[in-house]
Length: 103
Image 1 (tube, rainbow, N blue to C red):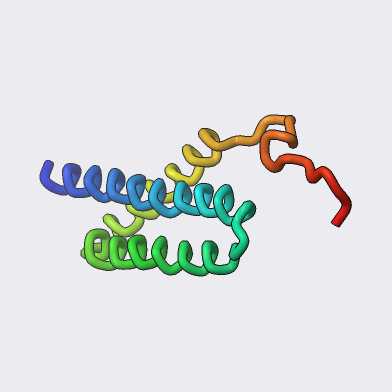
Image 2 (spheres, one colour):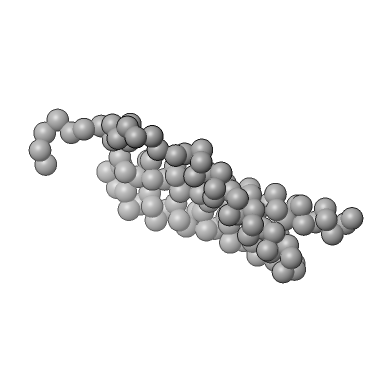
């Protein structure tokens, strides 16, 4: 019973880490595209996201291969959830406003 509880904790932790990583990626793309300095947004975002996710996998989920596997499964589930929640409709004007002049 204790093992099942620990594996459930690993799955939930993997989902949480995945939501942080992929949700942060979605947020960065939305903000970075319209920014004057997109490279700073993307570079800072990857450092922050990896700075949260990698220690989470190492310290929280790195006790056994079973918990690491459940955490990875949760991470993949979170990717699917974030992709489903942030799907783009067929309206491109929603993403970026059209420029009023030629570049």
